[in-house]
Length: 154
Image (cartoon, rainbow, N blue to C red; front, side):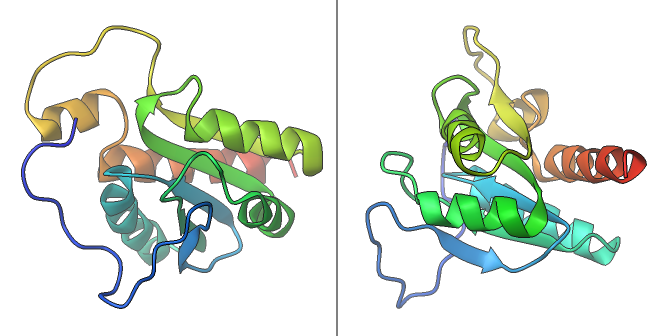
């Protein structure tokens, strides 16, 4: 869905490593895992959530294959709740890879935000991000709901 200029998220001295995630913010209530254009949306969602009192760990995954298995397992162990957001089908992408890892290593609840298995649409980027639930506001709503749901079962 990416069209036009995107904001710079990582510092100028960032050194890309295949299979290495980048922790943008540490937190212990929930992990938000993003990739691609959802990372910028996630940065804004994280700021909104932190101001509302939710301690979000935000991890950017620049590569899905290979995925940084250690970062996923550490997040699962330390936050016990992961929400993924991707500009991709919910099938076979970041959310699926994260779910597979936690299923094998440390089972926790994973909420996967992304595009359902369907044909895409043509519209403005903002409209599409909102429609598919991966705009900053929709990500923030989903994360807050996931945290609320978990709190209710303790």
